[in-house]
Length: 354
Image (tube, rainbow, N blue to C red):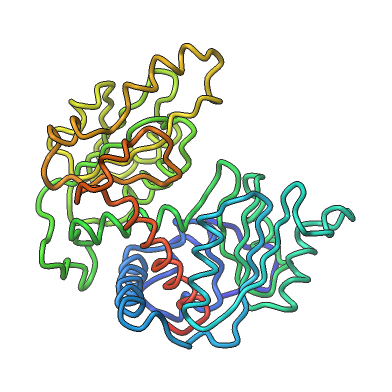
């Protein structure tokens, strides 16, 4: 599925990754738009089997002698560590390149293009995981015709971070027992979800790349539940119109706006919390005003539905009180663990050994 010509666009790849494992083999993963709903199902089922593998045996050797290039021009402890753990648990190994300021790569200091750096690293490795601060850069490298091995997008500026959106969607699917509107898509969990799926997105929705990607992914996937997205944000940090316009195209998705968190969580199935960052405000007093209004603590949890899971992309600072961690509904650490299982599944599918 790697084309030799230079003209592949992201649009050409829409829904190309399906339930057929052949579509995944040697494919790039640049955007969630590449994955059809049946592709999502095989990915999620593979991630579940990775979880039982890790819990019973720690891993296996299906990716023995495979080498991953972990190339990060922007630091991300969680994403790089989970990809590295993922390949090692499947018997492979990795080389890590820290391309950021003060990083260990000499290439960019010598003026080498990103394309050439990746093409050279591909001489030693089988798959590249790339994170870069410039939006669109990962897509440009992968689809520009200069690469010969698969590239996985680990985040490009404020653009896409597909594996984060996938681990988030997997967590919701798995925790709640969602059904997908495809062959064999009914949930096989003991507890399965019925009726509407109500997801509250809380905090800084303007800059929160994770909520943009998750909203789009949930809207475009054929889930068997009516989707209700409730946006709850301070007045300068609302969900951007480009995300809302995208979601609007899908008749199964409804969007609602709230300012009061306690109202927003009524009847909700998922509370997805993002950090309100001080550096996003021109005036510190504006930050101080809203900061406390969006803190999830035990008093909120007392009034929240008993089956509502709480998610957070982490790192958290003070937007979720640590006292909530022991609540069984707090699933952010399970969500992190799922990140490794989903990345194991992606590597197995792309390297052709699901």
